[in-house]
Amino acid sequence: MRRRFFVGIIFFSFLILLTGCSSGGGDTAFGLFGGDTSVAAGNATISGEVSGTVIVAINESNAEVARVTAAGTPKTFTFTVPTGHTYRIFLIENEDTLDQKIFALYNNATGTNCFAISSSVTIINFGYIDTTNGVKAIPTYDPLLVSGVSSIGENKSIPEIVLSGPPPTGTLSDLVGNGLALLKQGSVFKAKAYFKAAVTNYPDDNTNNGDTARFFYAVTRLAGVNPYSDGNSTGTLNSIGDILDRMGINNSDRNSYNYIISESKITSPIPQPLPDNYPTGNEMQIFLYNVIRPELEGALANLNGVQNEFEKQWANPIDSKYYKSDYADVLLLKAAIKGALAGIYIQYTYNLDVDIDLEFNKYKTNTVQSFLGDNGNFLKLLTGDYSTLQSTAKTYLSEAADHLTAAINKIQTRNTADYLVNLKEMTSDEFNDTKTKLAAAKSSLSGTSIIGDYNGTDVAINLLPFFGGLDLRNLLPPVTGNTAGFFPNATMGGIIIQGLNPNEDLNSNGIPDILE
Image 1 (cartoon, rainbow, N blue to C red):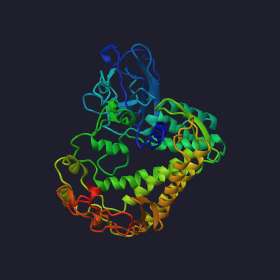
Image 2 (tube, rainbow, N blue to C red):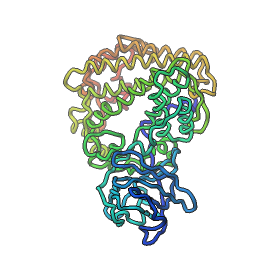
Image 3 (cartoon, rainbow, N blue to C red):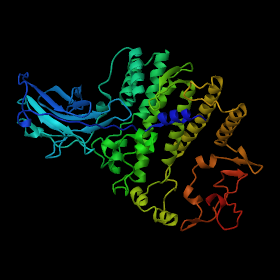
Image 4 (cartoon, rainbow, N blue to C red):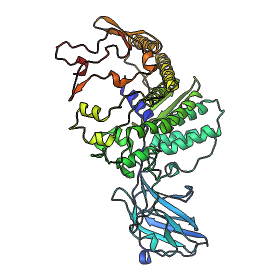
């Protein structure tokens, strides 16, 4: 399978794109007042000097009030906002690229980023705004020293409108074209806004443009999940940002592309040790089910509206190359989403509640025996009726197998290098073998199926017992230290019918070969 296939799948699978910014400032009399004072009553002019590019102001309703691009040497900006409101200001560096960064502007004295501007204020000059600490944007001149400017307290949330801008308008063709252009630059959040507007404003369009909007809205709603804080990460996990908050990763270090594209670009590896308030296993289970699942289902609904004839050429921002996507990509993405949904439904039926930060921080010295002893209910089937969840997971897996088979058939009909997903190195026999294995895997969801051979013996499994409610904890072998003994049930609860023996011990050392 070609490397571009994996590049595309990585792009499709992003649950995280992270952003940040850099800035600077200028001089006026006393650093606070100066310039043209002939400002209309009820407005305040804000200026400063930055090293970044874009400045965004939002009000207390999270509505964008101003978005300007700094210009000149040094880079300066000026914009006007209505008085009588509270504002937060954000600086963006490398806007509309995969290296985009964002910083909230704070005052240095009290640590606030919310500024109430009364009707008496006409001029506010921040001076040079410094972001070299990599966390916050700090102006040279404290805006709270301006008469009529007061602090409303800190608000850590970074609304998605800061990343995407206000909802765009235009014809379907314009919205799709602008969305693809922004995607080429790496501006996933803004591209998502355009594709969302296209789908929302033209829901019944059955042209290729309509299909393109639905396909890329599904892609970007997965890739463009807001990684920033919602302002409250101490309670229920509502966003990826909440998890990163609890992990202790600064806003300016949340660029997931840097983690994936090149190990040398990693700016903030997972903190060690993990903070004590890192989410527990149960919190992560609930987050996956309540937050991630609906987004996946929304993307799936978009893809269900794409027609078989869909085809579009587009530029992948990761490698800047043009590729074609067609209905095979739709099928592959649907299979990936349904596989992920199946996993979310299945994990929600088991006890996975562990103190993640505690276990992570001592994993080098801890043993498997100690871990299992400290977490006696780990991997046990939860009490209650989970038949609907497990049945849904089974259906999703069955449909995922169908989508993968259909995708392979589609790829075989146009298997050329100009498509994002191509399998040019695969032979006809390999294609047929893959489809045979997919059919066997699907069949095992409903009864006994031969899925291959091991040492000349047919391997047959039956996954029905699993979806009937299988307590995985009871299937674990006894463990002393880090050394496992034999599995108490060699059929793994009735899943293995023939051809495999998980307790096989060819060297007779008392440890199953598969666990050595």
